[in-house]
Amino acid sequence: MAGTKNGGKAAAATNKNKYGSDFYAKIGAKGGKLGKTGGFFANRDLAREAGAKGGRISRRTKKAE
Image (cartoon, rainbow, N blue to C red; front, side, top):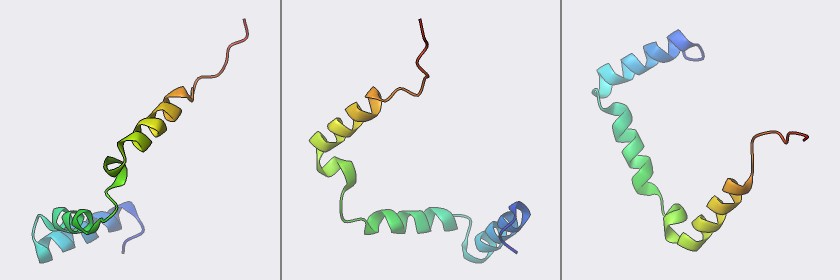
């Protein structure tokens, strides 16, 4: 019964026994090949801009001096 940690492990074992040890690699590859947008690689300038925005955001709290 999936929904618990042990259930997930049992389901994974069942899938691997039924469909082969590379079951999850196969379904992951299928998903990757179906992608049509290209992600950030399609627009390098947008990726650069987004990375710069993320880099400017500090996760540390500001210390009062």
